[in-house]
Image (tube, rainbow, N blue to C red; front, side, top):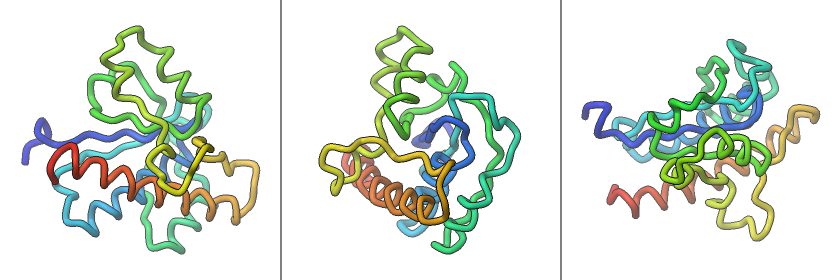
Length: 164
């Protein structure tokens, strides 16, 4: 399948070293587990330029490794071209959601942007994926659990939308 036919998903947080790489890694594992890897292009980015070029936070790597998830990522900043290049832009919290939306006035692009946790069927009112950066290993494990639940819900949504 050529890249123009693939479903393109971008995960976004602030620095692109904790939440969005975890969400990307978990989602890629879910795709592999469901024989769907060849149908997707998956990446992640940050709204800030604080960590451009950095590897994921070591605590994120440990949490991912303990769950059997591999993180192969180099942090990058979200750019306006990402609106053109991706079908779904999955943002980790309200602050970064607003930052992404503020980069364009094009409402067609706004329709591509979602709060990722809205796909977590167990999350009733709370839609932010908490930032574990100032926390410990348990905070990273919690984020891994949240992005796994959201990933399962998002994959169900994509199956329905794209008849996968």
